Length: 261
Image 1 (cartoon, rainbow, N blue to C red):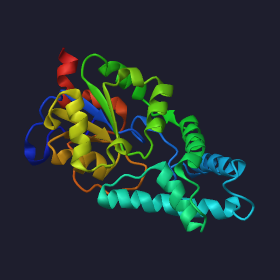
Image 2: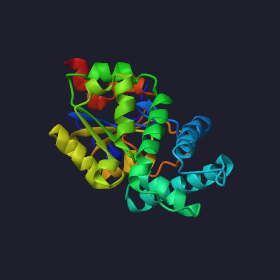
Image 3: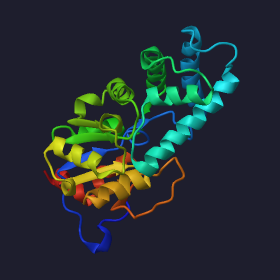
Protein backbone atom coordinates (compact mmCIF):
# COMPACT_ATOMS: atom_id res chain seq x y z
CA UNK A 1 0.00 0.00 0.00
CA UNK A 2 1.15 3.53 -0.74
CA UNK A 3 1.83 5.58 2.35
CA UNK A 4 -0.03 8.86 2.93
CA UNK A 5 -2.96 10.35 1.09
CA UNK A 6 -2.80 14.10 1.53
CA UNK A 7 -0.61 17.09 0.87
CA UNK A 8 1.32 18.79 3.64
CA UNK A 9 -0.99 20.84 5.82
CA UNK A 10 -3.84 18.36 5.26
CA UNK A 11 -4.94 19.85 1.94
CA UNK A 12 -6.03 17.02 -0.37
CA UNK A 13 -3.89 16.62 -3.46
CA UNK A 14 -5.69 17.57 -6.67
CA UNK A 15 -6.11 14.93 -9.40
CA UNK A 16 -3.00 14.76 -11.54
CA UNK A 17 -3.34 15.86 -15.15
CA UNK A 18 0.21 14.80 -16.05
CA UNK A 19 3.03 12.70 -14.63
CA UNK A 20 6.68 13.76 -14.55
CA UNK A 21 9.23 11.02 -13.92
CA UNK A 22 12.82 11.26 -12.84
CA UNK A 23 15.10 9.07 -14.97
CA UNK A 24 17.98 7.39 -13.10
CA UNK A 25 16.85 5.31 -10.14
CA UNK A 26 13.20 5.81 -11.07
CA UNK A 27 12.56 4.46 -14.57
CA UNK A 28 16.09 3.30 -15.38
CA UNK A 29 18.73 1.64 -13.23
CA UNK A 30 21.78 3.70 -14.15
CA UNK A 31 25.36 2.62 -13.26
CA UNK A 32 26.05 5.55 -10.95
CA UNK A 33 29.41 5.64 -9.20
CA UNK A 34 27.77 5.50 -5.76
CA UNK A 35 25.20 2.81 -6.58
CA UNK A 36 26.90 0.46 -9.05
CA UNK A 37 30.59 1.38 -8.76
CA UNK A 38 31.96 -1.69 -10.55
CA UNK A 39 29.77 -1.16 -13.62
CA UNK A 40 30.56 2.56 -13.56
CA UNK A 41 34.29 1.81 -13.53
CA UNK A 42 33.89 -0.48 -16.55
CA UNK A 43 32.22 2.36 -18.48
CA UNK A 44 34.95 4.84 -17.57
CA UNK A 45 37.58 2.26 -18.49
CA UNK A 46 36.06 2.08 -21.99
CA UNK A 47 36.52 5.84 -22.30
CA UNK A 48 40.09 5.60 -21.01
CA UNK A 49 40.94 2.91 -23.55
CA UNK A 50 39.56 5.18 -26.28
CA UNK A 51 41.74 8.05 -25.06
CA UNK A 52 44.78 5.79 -25.25
CA UNK A 53 43.79 4.39 -28.64
CA UNK A 54 43.33 7.88 -30.05
CA UNK A 55 46.74 8.95 -28.79
CA UNK A 56 45.40 11.44 -26.24
CA UNK A 57 46.95 9.51 -23.34
CA UNK A 58 50.13 7.47 -23.15
CA UNK A 59 52.01 5.30 -20.67
CA UNK A 60 52.69 8.34 -18.50
CA UNK A 61 49.02 8.31 -17.53
CA UNK A 62 48.10 4.75 -16.58
CA UNK A 63 44.55 3.76 -15.66
CA UNK A 64 45.48 3.73 -11.98
CA UNK A 65 46.33 7.42 -12.20
CA UNK A 66 43.54 8.44 -14.55
CA UNK A 67 40.57 6.88 -12.76
CA UNK A 68 40.83 8.63 -9.36
CA UNK A 69 41.44 11.99 -11.01
CA UNK A 70 38.48 11.52 -13.36
CA UNK A 71 36.24 10.48 -10.46
CA UNK A 72 37.34 13.41 -8.31
CA UNK A 73 36.52 15.81 -11.14
CA UNK A 74 33.19 14.11 -11.78
CA UNK A 75 32.17 14.40 -8.13
CA UNK A 76 33.33 18.02 -8.05
CA UNK A 77 31.12 18.89 -11.02
CA UNK A 78 28.16 17.02 -9.53
CA UNK A 79 28.60 18.96 -6.27
CA UNK A 80 28.75 22.19 -8.24
CA UNK A 81 25.47 21.33 -9.93
CA UNK A 82 23.85 20.62 -6.56
CA UNK A 83 25.07 23.92 -5.12
CA UNK A 84 24.63 26.26 -8.09
CA UNK A 85 22.13 24.33 -10.27
CA UNK A 86 24.59 24.74 -13.15
CA UNK A 87 24.84 21.54 -15.19
CA UNK A 88 28.12 20.38 -16.69
CA UNK A 89 28.86 18.31 -19.80
CA UNK A 90 30.93 15.24 -20.55
CA UNK A 91 33.24 17.47 -22.58
CA UNK A 92 33.81 19.65 -19.53
CA UNK A 93 34.40 16.55 -17.41
CA UNK A 94 37.16 15.25 -19.68
CA UNK A 95 38.66 18.70 -20.19
CA UNK A 96 38.87 19.34 -16.47
CA UNK A 97 40.33 15.88 -15.89
CA UNK A 98 43.11 16.63 -18.37
CA UNK A 99 43.77 19.92 -16.57
CA UNK A 100 44.03 18.14 -13.22
CA UNK A 101 46.48 15.70 -14.79
CA UNK A 102 48.57 18.59 -16.10
CA UNK A 103 47.83 17.70 -19.72
CA UNK A 104 47.07 20.12 -22.54
CA UNK A 105 43.44 20.27 -23.69
CA UNK A 106 43.35 18.62 -27.13
CA UNK A 107 40.17 20.42 -28.21
CA UNK A 108 36.54 19.40 -27.82
CA UNK A 109 36.50 17.78 -31.25
CA UNK A 110 39.16 15.28 -30.13
CA UNK A 111 37.06 14.38 -27.10
CA UNK A 112 33.99 13.71 -29.26
CA UNK A 113 34.73 10.01 -29.93
CA UNK A 114 35.56 9.48 -26.25
CA UNK A 115 32.23 10.95 -25.18
CA UNK A 116 30.48 8.64 -27.64
CA UNK A 117 32.30 5.58 -26.30
CA UNK A 118 31.44 6.50 -22.71
CA UNK A 119 27.81 7.11 -23.68
CA UNK A 120 27.50 3.76 -25.44
CA UNK A 121 29.01 1.97 -22.45
CA UNK A 122 26.64 3.66 -20.02
CA UNK A 123 23.63 2.82 -22.18
CA UNK A 124 24.73 -0.81 -22.37
CA UNK A 125 24.91 -1.02 -18.58
CA UNK A 126 21.48 0.52 -17.95
CA UNK A 127 18.37 -1.56 -17.37
CA UNK A 128 14.70 -0.79 -16.73
CA UNK A 129 13.57 -0.43 -13.14
CA UNK A 130 11.07 -3.04 -11.94
CA UNK A 131 7.52 -2.05 -12.78
CA UNK A 132 8.50 0.77 -15.14
CA UNK A 133 7.30 -0.84 -18.35
CA UNK A 134 3.93 -1.89 -16.94
CA UNK A 135 3.37 1.55 -15.42
CA UNK A 136 4.15 3.44 -18.61
CA UNK A 137 1.92 1.07 -20.56
CA UNK A 138 -0.91 1.76 -18.11
CA UNK A 139 -0.50 5.55 -18.39
CA UNK A 140 -0.18 5.57 -22.19
CA UNK A 141 -2.95 7.58 -23.83
CA UNK A 142 -4.52 8.42 -20.47
CA UNK A 143 -2.22 11.11 -19.10
CA UNK A 144 0.66 13.02 -20.69
CA UNK A 145 4.02 11.80 -19.42
CA UNK A 146 7.46 13.41 -19.36
CA UNK A 147 10.89 12.42 -18.10
CA UNK A 148 12.81 15.14 -16.27
CA UNK A 149 16.44 14.19 -15.70
CA UNK A 150 19.59 15.66 -14.23
CA UNK A 151 22.23 14.34 -16.60
CA UNK A 152 25.15 15.97 -18.41
CA UNK A 153 24.63 14.24 -21.77
CA UNK A 154 21.17 13.91 -23.34
CA UNK A 155 22.04 11.02 -25.73
CA UNK A 156 22.57 8.69 -22.76
CA UNK A 157 19.09 9.39 -21.40
CA UNK A 158 17.53 9.12 -24.86
CA UNK A 159 19.42 5.93 -25.62
CA UNK A 160 18.39 4.12 -22.47
CA UNK A 161 14.74 5.10 -22.91
CA UNK A 162 14.81 3.90 -26.50
CA UNK A 163 16.54 0.62 -25.59
CA UNK A 164 13.90 -0.07 -22.94
CA UNK A 165 11.06 0.76 -25.31
CA UNK A 166 9.93 3.62 -23.06
CA UNK A 167 10.42 6.38 -25.62
CA UNK A 168 7.14 5.68 -27.39
CA UNK A 169 5.20 6.35 -24.17
CA UNK A 170 6.73 9.78 -23.54
CA UNK A 171 5.27 13.10 -24.57
CA UNK A 172 8.34 15.09 -23.54
CA UNK A 173 11.92 14.67 -22.37
CA UNK A 174 13.70 17.43 -20.46
CA UNK A 175 17.37 16.89 -19.63
CA UNK A 176 19.42 19.31 -17.55
CA UNK A 177 22.18 19.28 -20.17
CA UNK A 178 19.81 20.98 -22.62
CA UNK A 179 19.00 23.87 -20.30
CA UNK A 180 22.37 24.14 -18.58
CA UNK A 181 20.34 24.03 -15.37
CA UNK A 182 19.90 21.15 -12.96
CA UNK A 183 17.13 20.15 -10.59
CA UNK A 184 16.03 21.58 -8.21
CA UNK A 185 16.17 24.77 -10.32
CA UNK A 186 12.51 25.67 -10.95
CA UNK A 187 12.95 26.25 -14.68
CA UNK A 188 13.49 22.56 -15.42
CA UNK A 189 10.08 21.65 -13.92
CA UNK A 190 8.35 24.60 -15.56
CA UNK A 191 9.78 23.58 -18.92
CA UNK A 192 8.49 20.02 -18.56
CA UNK A 193 5.02 21.12 -17.50
CA UNK A 194 4.84 23.62 -20.37
CA UNK A 195 5.82 20.92 -22.87
CA UNK A 196 2.86 18.89 -21.65
CA UNK A 197 0.52 21.88 -21.75
CA UNK A 198 -0.29 21.84 -18.03
CA UNK A 199 0.52 23.92 -14.96
CA UNK A 200 3.11 22.58 -12.49
CA UNK A 201 0.45 22.26 -9.80
CA UNK A 202 -1.41 19.81 -12.06
CA UNK A 203 1.61 17.48 -12.22
CA UNK A 204 2.56 14.45 -10.17
CA UNK A 205 6.36 14.23 -9.90
CA UNK A 206 7.82 10.78 -9.25
CA UNK A 207 11.45 10.27 -8.24
CA UNK A 208 13.94 8.91 -5.74
CA UNK A 209 15.95 11.97 -4.64
CA UNK A 210 14.56 14.12 -1.80
CA UNK A 211 15.94 17.45 -3.04
CA UNK A 212 15.60 17.15 -6.81
CA UNK A 213 12.39 15.14 -6.87
CA UNK A 214 10.50 16.45 -3.84
CA UNK A 215 11.67 19.87 -2.66
CA UNK A 216 12.19 21.30 -6.14
CA UNK A 217 8.87 20.33 -7.74
CA UNK A 218 6.90 20.92 -4.52
CA UNK A 219 7.99 24.56 -4.53
CA UNK A 220 6.08 24.97 -7.79
CA UNK A 221 3.02 23.21 -6.46
CA UNK A 222 3.61 19.73 -7.88
CA UNK A 223 2.31 16.72 -6.02
CA UNK A 224 5.29 14.47 -5.23
CA UNK A 225 5.77 10.72 -4.85
CA UNK A 226 9.09 9.56 -3.39
CA UNK A 227 10.59 6.14 -4.06
CA UNK A 228 13.23 4.60 -1.77
CA UNK A 229 16.54 6.15 -2.80
CA UNK A 230 19.82 4.38 -3.40
CA UNK A 231 21.93 7.44 -2.55
CA UNK A 232 21.40 7.49 1.22
CA UNK A 233 20.03 11.05 1.12
CA UNK A 234 18.01 12.32 4.07
CA UNK A 235 14.43 13.40 3.41
CA UNK A 236 14.46 17.20 3.61
CA UNK A 237 10.76 17.81 3.08
CA UNK A 238 8.03 15.23 3.44
CA UNK A 239 6.68 14.23 0.01
CA UNK A 240 2.99 14.15 -0.76
CA UNK A 241 3.29 10.36 -0.92
CA UNK A 242 5.87 7.69 -0.21
CA UNK A 243 5.77 4.60 -2.40
CA UNK A 244 7.82 1.44 -2.02
CA UNK A 245 7.87 0.75 -5.75
CA UNK A 246 6.45 1.94 -9.06
CA UNK A 247 3.79 -0.74 -8.73
CA UNK A 248 2.09 1.41 -6.08
CA UNK A 249 1.80 4.59 -8.14
CA UNK A 250 -1.54 3.88 -9.80
CA UNK A 251 -3.07 3.32 -6.37
CA UNK A 252 -2.45 6.92 -5.27
CA UNK A 253 -5.52 9.12 -4.71
CA UNK A 254 -4.26 11.67 -7.24
CA UNK A 255 -4.66 9.01 -9.94
CA UNK A 256 -8.03 7.68 -8.74
CA UNK A 257 -9.72 9.18 -11.80
CA UNK A 258 -7.78 6.72 -13.96
CA UNK A 259 -9.18 3.80 -12.02
CA UNK A 260 -12.76 5.04 -12.29
CA UNK A 261 -12.48 6.15 -15.92
